[in-house]
Image 1: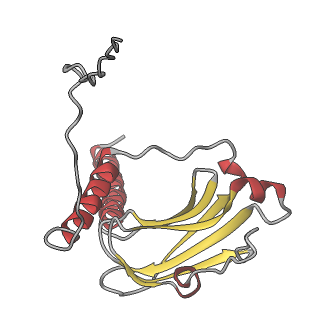
Image 2 (image 1 turned 180 degrees about the horizontal axis):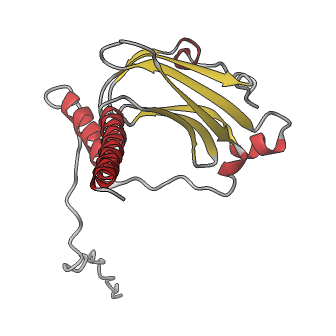
Length: 209
């Protein structure tokens, strides 16, 4: 092979390397952009919360506000409760759900549900926008299963929930503070170290004849 052929071959190899590097950089930048978008978007999830009371849980676990949130359940939600009515949040959606906001909606009693002929699987479609409301909306799909809650227990309250409960108790006590409010009457505890007093009995007198 002549020097010209070797030079042309080296040029083609160099070009191929640059093309490969360009393709790698393109996919790397695209994945980085997708990851950045996923980290700065709302993310609304729907699921059943574990426990013998079946609750539908909706939460925005994303980092920004979800706007114009809409839900679609297939088949339509049904409950063993005769007085059950689908709440407005599920029927009409929400104008916005801020990050970290969680809704828990009482849906059914798990035991009654498992013993009934009602559907156990639901397909959920959640549609919403981000803060800019530009382009296509986010569309997420979930499959939620009531049978998957069999044998589950209600989680114990954590420190944050206990703190919230104490805060509510404090608010109630403050509302009753002052005149005419909540009055607590206490009495001192009895001192058992002092023996009880015995009543003196009158002495009987003998009558002399």
